[in-house]
Image (cartoon, rainbow, N blue to C red; front, side, top):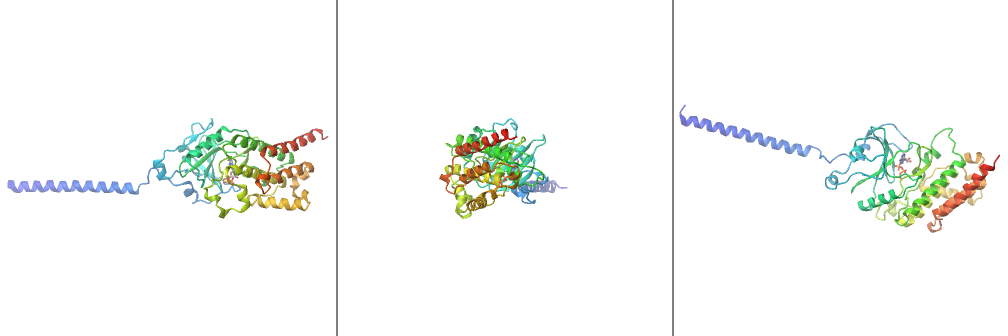
Length: 381
Ligand SMILES: Nc1ncnc2c1ncn2[C@@H]1O[C@H](COP(=O)(O)OP(=O)(O)OP(=O)(O)O)[C@@H](O)[C@H]1O
């Protein structure tokens, strides 16, 4: 071959090789770009609701044993920019708990309430926690953190403390110890054949809740933090069946909260909720409804409005004894003391918030009834 044609062949060989290399590089770049577009963002994880919504939902009264992978996801966009992590409060039980641990542990949906969703989260070491995912609370992160710190300082034996919380722009999670004995609601209305819930126990529970609520109101009055959602599902029973108030101060209505809009609340509900100051009176109303539930054994509907108006109508007709739960009457409980407790309940559910008693007045009225009841037990043959 002539030297000229030899160099032409070599030259075209180099060009061809160059083209192949450029082609390969372009292909590789293109593939990488496609991978980047298709691959989920490392922060993007499906939300709890995304996952749960694909399964039948469980309700508090319909416990199932299905366990799913929990995914307390934070929103992809916010997680990339807002550093947020699980804040463990003064709790030795979960001092090492990380947000990732919550994400990876299996969870069971316990219930979807007005204010959020509750999950039972089970850990490998056997620890079981209840995690509440709060919905639609337009509270700033700073305010939320401050509130959590104040709540953590107000400790009472009959108030369930939050163990930890997570707060970012779109997500607020609260971590509690799981209470396997259920709530006052399940004790009163659950189907547990043969289970007796006699007058003395009901009165004791009422007195304990009132004392605990009085303590919290005293401690948190200046901060304007009432319970905000007091009802029998939020009275849990500890291992020793002692009652404890759960979710204190975590659902208070924010004036900007869309769920407090006039459209979806009737006038009575507006009275029972509201700003932080009227919230304390709303707690008294909620407590009054709990007393009515204890006395009548009846289910509460429509935020207690049905039950209170039924009780009022019966009392007006002077058939008062008719309101009491048959099972406590058959226990031989004192009708007089039951009537006294009914009077306390009726004062608490007064439609005018300013006419409701303070919680310390409620405590003293209930304690008087309880002292009389205790005395009668001592002197009875
Ligand atoms: N820490 C807990 N341990 C065990 N059970 C709990 C715990 N906290 C709540 N529960 C129960 O789980 C169920 C669902 O709770 P959730 O708070 O979602 O319901 P709710 O009180 O009706 O709703 P909301 O508070 O949003 O109005 C209720 O029956 C409640 O008694």
